[in-house]
Every structure is written in C-alpha cells, then in structure tokens.
Amino acid sequence: MNGYNQSAQTGEIGSANASVSHASPLVLVRHFRQILLWPLRVIPSQAERTHFSKYWEVLEALGERCPWREVVDEFGDPASFQERHYQEFVTFMPYVQRFLYGEGAGREGQTGYGKSPIRVFRRRDIAQMRVVLDEQTPPLLFQIAHVDLYFFYDIDVIIPAVEFFANDLPLTLAEDVLFKVGRAYPAFWEADGRGGECPRRVEWLSATGETLAASDYEDRHRYLSFVCRHRSPNVATHWEYLLRPLAFYHSDREGAIRYRQIEYHRMPLLAYLSFSDPQSLTRGDFARLALITKAGPSETLPYSEKQLADFEQHYCNDKFWDPDNPALTSRYLCCGHAFVVIGKAHERFFADPETGLLGQFRHQYFLINLIAHFHKATLLLFSEWLVEAISQLDIRDTDSVRAFKREIRRIMETFLRFTQRYWFHEVSNQAQVRDLFQLLTGHLNTDRIYQDVSTSVREMNQYLDSDSLRRQANTVVRLTVVTTLGLIATVSTGFLGMNIFDETDNPAWVKLLIFSVVLVPSTLLVNYAVAHSKVLSDFLEALADKKLTWWDRLQILFRIWREPPQKAAKP
Image (cartoon, rainbow, N blue to C red):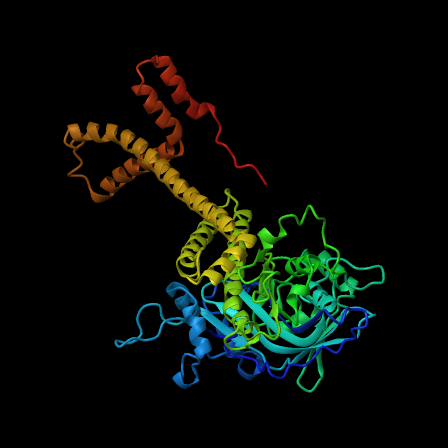
C-alpha cells in the first residue's frame, strides 16, 4: 500500500529526553508509537468552482517548489516485494484490495479496476518533533517515521498522517502526549494564557536539529480575531506549516490547494504501547488509554464507576488478553476517536516490526483506521454539500433554481460513485481484523451517518423529480387550454373550407395586410390564454361538472378579470 508500507528503521529509536522522577519507574512504555490522522475538506478555487478528480496533480505541477513527493508502492518491483507486503495484501477482501492497491494489467493490457484511487505524498524534511507538555516536564524528543498526505480520486477529502515514536517513556507522559499533541487549535485558554489541554510548545525539527516551525497555542488574540472575522476556527502554526503549500481556507496566505476542517479540533489517532509487564496496568490505566483522557494515578478512574461499568464490553477487544494467563498479553482498545494496541515488549508476537503486531499496527490496522475515518469524513462532506446547496436556493430566482438542480445532480452522481467505489461494511475475512473494524466503525457510527446522508440525497433527488413533473404538468395544462380555444376557430374556418372570403385576385400587399390583421389578434389571444391558463383550466373543468349551474361556471370564468395577478414577495 502507498505510504505506510515503507517500513521505518525501528532498530534505532531515539528515547524521549524526559525525567521520570514523578512517575513510577515500573510503569514505562518501552516503545511508544503514535499516528495522527487529520481528515480535511478540500475547497475548490473560487475562480474554478469545480470539483477536481485528481487534486494531487496540483502538487505535481509545482515541481521542486513543493516539499511533497509521491510515494511509489512496492508492487512495481518483484525483487523488493517482501512477505510483509504479501501478508498485508491478503488481509483484505478482494474489493478492498482493489481500493487500496488497484489492479494490475492482465495479458490483454489494462482492464477492469485500474490503478488505486488513492495517492500518497510524503515530505521528508521533518525528521523530529520536540514537545514541551508543561513547565514542569523537560522537552520530549520524538523521531518522525512518516509525514504523509493521502488523496482520494473524485472526493474532496485529504488526510494528513503523522507517525512518531520514542522509547522508555513514562506512562503518565505517554498519556499526556496522547491527550494533548493531536490538537489543531486550543478549545480554551488557562489562566496563565497557555492553550487549554494543549502542549506548551510543539516544534518540527530537521535532521540537523534546526527548528522548522513551532506551535502558537498561547496566542489567544490570533485565534479570537480569526473566529471573529471568519466565523471559523484557525489552525496552529506548526500544523499550517506541515501542510504547505496547501493553505487554510480563510488564510491570507496563497496556497496551491485550500482546505478546511471537517470535524473538531482533536485529531483521530492510533497508538502502540509496549510494556515489560502489560498485566501490571490497572483498570484506570486502560480507561485513560482507551478514552484518551488526562494522565492520572493508576489507582483511580478517569470517570465515575457508573460511567465505566461496561467499559470492557464497549471499548476492549480481549481475544488475546487474559490477566490470569501470562501467554495472553495483547489488548486492543478503541473508542472511535482512538485505536490503541497494548502488549508485551519482549514478545516476538507483539514487538516484531515485520510480522508481529508492531508491523500489523503500522500497516493493516493503520489501513482499517484510514478507511473508517475516510468514510466518516466523506459522509460529513456530503452532508455539508447538501446544506450549502439548499442554503443558496432561492425559488423565486430562476438562475438559483437551475444552479441548485445542477449541484444536487452532481452530489447524487458523486454519492453513487462513492458507494460503488469506496463504501463497504466488511474489509476482511480474518476474524481479528473484521472484529476490530466493526468495533471501530460502531463507535464512529458510520452506518447511521451513511443512512442519513443516503436518505437526504434521495429526498433531494425526489424533490427535483417531483418539481420537474409539476412543471411538465403546468405546461400540459397551458397547452390544453390554448388547444381547446384554438379548436373553436379551427372548426369554424375549416367547416367552410377556409373560403369565407375570396381574396385570390387582390394584390400581394392586401393579402399581407389581411395576414397581419389575423396574426396579431391570434398572437394576443394565445398569450392571453397562456397567462390565464389556470383560471381557464378551472373553467373547463367546471363546464364538465354537471352539478354546477351556468351561473357558477360563469363566476369561475369571471375570476380572470376579478383577481389581480400575484406578485412575488420581496425577500
């Protein structure tokens, strides 16, 4: 698969430079790895106002000016195709394989599905991340494994993915990193001015240790003024730097592609934590890791006992976990927002970066999370499109109605392509992967969102169909009235064979004058009949109703002159 199939060098992992004096030395995360996913919406340029199928071509066109380079997958060279790649490929169902990897050319050339609709771009200038959680904690130094950007054909969604890791990290610091690092902007500010529940500072570093960009969570004025001007939250400067040359939608900076947020400020994440003895973790530790809450004492719970009464049933997959069995030490935690894998550091089954759970975490489990969050982001995008389309509709403006119809037809077509190309309920026949995907999508509630969006799109389409039928019916009524009135003149003149007046010997100008005298009243009569076709139609129906008297029928006809034409109300 493009992107995460390029394995990082896990043999040489930098340790977090942190003091452990305030944390128990017995609870160390021997290997900590986190992947942040940030679903974003792409905004077409105001000049084009079109939805491109291949947004990645915009980055390719920049050439050397763009730090992002496309990642070539492993399917091109059989010599570099390893067993790990094979295991990843066969994990998924055939239709998911085609979505993730595309389909190779057969004996008769390229047929069928073709290339994968996913394109992955990577920037390699960011090598490390330095995090200052608070003033009491020394800086933590994480190694960056990947900074990738995922594009999807025909869908205005991109997903940046950042993977970083460290060794021998105290559990309380690991909990704080999970809780604080993946935030696009602060939700509030503390009394001392720092961003609420955000790190004190986050820096992107180059391979030589040079600071490339730093966060600005403490700059309250910048965030407040931005929301006041644009009614949209801003993003922290280090995240804005990471996505360049893409630019935030309301930013004053020029950008090759504009983006805006789809969900809220906390980014979905995956986390891998290995311990010397994972069975020494308490229920409070597991609850904090599963629900991504603030760090706290192991002997306490992050929430009330009542709130966590069904914690194990709702958030844990314990197929390979049993506190009474030393052979079962791997546990999977999921709340939708987060997917966490916990296990024993010295077990090959868990720690092997190629065939163990570490390798599966970075590849198979990353992909099922990518698919699930892509599904949710795309469905929310469709919902936004529908809201925008209906909010711009003015039924009194013909141009607005036409634009609304075009937009709804486009959304309908795109939704059908999304359903056939990207949407699936199951991704694998392997029991563990299948169960974890169901646990993840159950918490994300994507099935319900899909049904809601599908119903909304269908109702919009039905509205357009019914509106078209109504307009056609009105046209038929008008034509029927005009035809009925014209029938009287046709029968009258046709009965006499069109020879009521003999104008054969008259000069041409007399014939032309007679033609004009007949044409003008006939045109006026037709226009008048069309303008009052509704009342005339009611009069024709009244004529056919034997229960009405002639006076009642004439009263309906007289409404033509009694009722003034209705004017459209001013907005």
